[in-house]
Image (cartoon, rainbow, N blue to C red; front, side):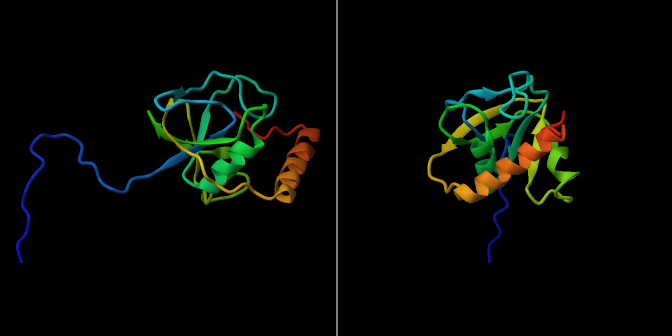
Amino acid sequence: MEINKSENKSNEPIHRPFFQTFFHGTKADLKIGDFIESGNNSNYGQRNKAKYIYLTATLDAAVWGAELALGEGRERIYLVEPMGSIEDDPNLTDKKFPGNPTKSYRSKHPFKVVGEITIWQNHSPEQINAMKGGLAKLKEQGIEAIED
């Protein structure tokens, strides 16, 4: 058996076939190469200026993001590459799903759009209505879906 002892002598990144994929669900119409940045009006709640932007490593969470985003645009899911550090999304991980099973994160650094998922399955109308109803009850109690 022969062992390949070649080395990466150019000090360039070694591209591996499998790396973490991140998704961003929204109704914004973006193009490959665009950047998603904080400081814009949020897609949720009171539409305040967003201190953070959000991404997830699960397609299901991105689908929820697209379905629940405010606005009239078409629901979209983008493949994104974070341009800086990310942290667990405390709106989900600390309050609803300890351990971050939804693989939801946030960042103050931009995300670069590197692709778009064009074929995906929506949640059922019943699931969407139940989620929106739950968010409406929280709003009545003065609890925002996203707390910065």
